[in-house]
Amino acid sequence: MKLLLLTSLLAVAFTVTAAAQDLKEPKSADELWAQIEKLQEPPATRPESREEMEKVYNEIIAKLEPALAHFVKTYPAETRSWPARMMLAKLALMRDKDGKAGTGRTEAEKLLQEIVAAKAAPAEARTEARVGLLQLHAEPVAETPTKEGLEKLDKEIAEFVKETADERAEVYAKSMRVQLYSRWKDPQADKVLKELAADKNADIAKMAQQHLTKRELASKPVELKFTGIDGKEVDVAKLRGKVVLVDFWATWCGPCRAELPNLLATYKKYHDKGFEVIGISLDEDKDALLEYIKKNELTWPQYFDGKGWENEISTRFGITGIPAMWLLDKKGFVRSEEARGAKLGELVEKLLAE
Image 1 (cartoon, rainbow, N blue to C red):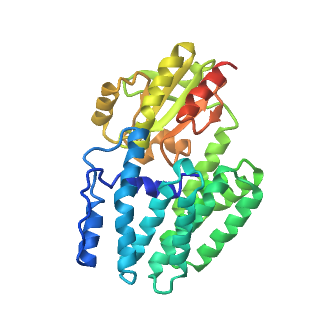
Image 2 (cartoon, rainbow, N blue to C red):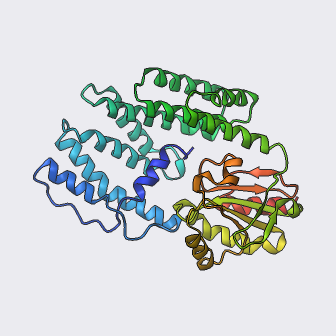
Image 3 (tube, helix red, strand yellow):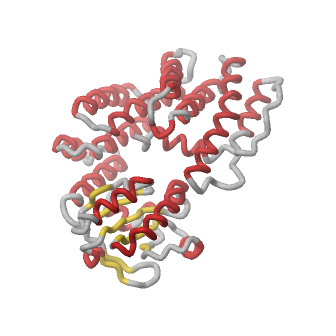
């Protein structure tokens, strides 16, 4: 699962410059920390593709990791050594490409365990590290949800929620449960989501209800009708007999833009064979969206209401993260909610052949 810890890793990736200067020998903790902060200045241009993103990852690790390690080694009792350790854990995970287990994951878990066990560490740092461990343990469970795996992780989350005094961390742990159970196709998952839909926290309740709605939608053909940004009427029901990708995205979403080259190539290859794309934009700036559509020659219809994350269609369908790429078969049923990368072309070809 990449939706949890890797979300924060992407945030790190987009705040580290590829043009950072080599470190000079620091004379104090303040000077070394200033150099570390320099390495985190925004890049001149944001990565537009997976290749560029990977290049940024490599440059982050090559520059930032040794600086952080030097800080921890030289100033182990300094307050900033704890966020430095957290950053090292995140960078270590970057070495495990595509979520595959490796030395980086092992190093990250060790660093996080050390922070949790350190009595000298501030309570906030220990809480953050414990959340990081929950994220690590959640990844394999989300990739392959099983009753045993979910029950074990549930116990760990329950203990954390009971012991933490950090309300934000508690909410995050509960949101983790929502995401995990939303991926398990089992009546027990529906039961847990219904319990979470009644949570005292309104955000958790809303998130759980959105996933319940999405699960209900999967049991019947998708009904989607709207007036596109170009003024033309769109009705998915009229596209029965074709394979349709419903792409929930936004121009400000880096991963969404990174998917675009592959999406365009797939559309060009299969459009004449019966493949259609419908965009649901979570943008708020209409002019920026229109400019992006024109620049990238996106010819498929787009829905836009300017409400961002409160977009009426994405909210109705329980979308909590983008890109969300739903692939509908010829009968209008959702056959994949993660039709991304190389998998998109493979799935489209398979569904067209049915």
